[in-house]
Amino acid sequence: MTQNTIHYLSWIDVDNELHSVRLLAGQRYVIGRSDQADVEVLNTSVSRQHLELFWQQGALLIRDLRSSYGTWADNQRVERDDTPILHADTELKLGNLSMWYERRLDNESQEMFQTCFHPPTKDDEVELSSEFNDFRRKLLFLLQDNFGDNTLNIKLIRKIDDELHELINAQELRLKEQRILNSISHILNRSLTLKELLKTSLNLVSKVLNAERGFVVVKDPGNELMEIPAVRHFEDFEWHSQPAEPRAFSQKLVQKCFRQNKILIIGDSMLNDSMDDLAPTEDGGGRSVVVIPLVQDTQVIGVIYLDNQQQAHNFNPQQIPFLTTFAAHTSIALHNSLLYKRAITDDLTQLFTRQHIDEALALEMQRAIRYEHDLSLLILDLDHFKSINDSHGHTTGDQVLKAFSEIIRAHIRECDMAGRFGGEEFIVILAETDIKGAFILAERIRHATEQLRIDKSGESISLTVSIGAASAHVSQDNNTVLFIEAADKALYQAKEQGRNQTVCA
Image (cartoon, helix red, strand yellow):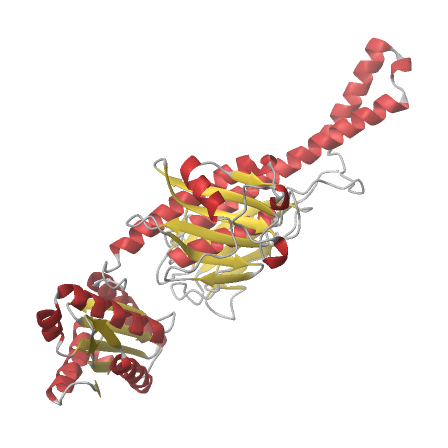
C-alpha cells in the first residue's frame, strides 16, 4: 500500500516553540501577523498579510502580498507578482522569521522530534510497500525456479518476510533521522540569540533521545572554569545569564569529554565506579548518561550533557552517527552566536555596546511608530565617578561599573535592552513603556544603587546615580538623535538639580 505524502509548514515563533501546520491540497493560505490570517505568526517583522500559499496543477506556489520587509525563498527574494514553486525543504524568510516547507509520510507523527531510536515492538505491524511486495514475489519465484517447490516451506517464507520487515523498519528509522536532522538544521541556522539557541538545542535533542534532563556546559577561555548557561529539567528550561553552580552531573565525565573530544555514553551509572562524583539516582543523579562535544576548529567549545534518571541504557552507540551530525550543526550555530554576542557586548559590563544600542533603538522606534506602541529611554550617569577612580584606582572603578551593571540587569525585563553608553554612562531601551513606567523603573534602579556598598581596603564605597527619562514622540519622526537628546537633557537637568534623582523630559 502506497503511503500518502502530507505537506507541512513549520517555524519557531516568539515563544521559542516549534509550530507546524498541515497544508491541505487545493486550499489557499495567507500567512501574516493577524488573527485574520489563515496561519498567524507573532513576529513583528511579518506584515499582517505577508505571504500567500496556493496550489496550481499539483504544485505549491508562493506570492508575496506586498509585505513591508519582503519574502525570500532559499535566499532568493520573491519579487512582486512572481509566483515561484515551493519545493520540499525550501526555507522561507518573512522579514526575520524563518519557516520551512516539509513533506512527510502519513504514518509520521506531527510531533517531528519524538524519539526515533526506540526498537519496534513485536506488536508493531509494518506494511510492506508495493516495491517491497514486488521484490518479495520475484524472490520467491526465483527460489522456486531454481530449487523447486520443496524449498519454499513455511519456515523459509516467514524468514524472508521477517528480514524484509527488519529492512523496511531500519529504512524508515534512517529516513526519520534524516528528516529530523534536516529540520534541526533549518532551526539552528536561523538568527538565534545564545539563549534561544541553547534552549532549542536542548529541547530538540532531548525529545529525539528521550532524555529527561540536559545541561549545556561551556568553559571560560580566560580561566578554564566551567559555566552552565542552560539547564533543561524534564520540560522546564532555565537560562543563566551569569555562571551557575554545578548541578547533579558528573564533572569528571564532562572534563573527559573536553579532553578526548568524543561522544561518551554511560549505560548505567549505578554500575560504573568511575562516576563517583555523581549523586545517586535517588538524590537526583542520572542513571544513563550521554555527553556530546561541541567542536569548532578541533577545539571543544562546550558540551551537551543528557541523562535519564530512572532508565538504564537509554542511550546507545546506534545513536552516535545522529549525534555527530547534530553536534556539528549545533557547534557551528553556537560558534556564530558566541562571535555575534562578543561583537555586540561590552567586555567589562557585559551589557550591549553603544553601536548595537544605536541600531536597536532605530528598529524599536520604527516599530513603535508603525504599531503605535509606547517606547521610552533612560540615560543613567554615575555621580562623582571620577573621584572614585582618582581615590581608589581604576580597578575599583571597574568593580563599581560591574556592580552597577548588575543592578540594571536585575531590574529590567527580558524584552528591554541595556547598554554602556560610554565611560560611566549607561542607556536602557524600554519597549512598550510610557514615561510613567520609565520613571518607576528608573527610581527602582536609583534606590538600589543608593543601597550598594563596595568594600575596598576596609573602606565602604557608596554610590548614587542621576537618570534622565524620555518617551518617543511623533514629532521626533523616527529620529533617534532627537530621542537621545531629550533623555540627555533630562539627565543634565538631574545633575544641575543636585544629582541622585530622576528627571523626565
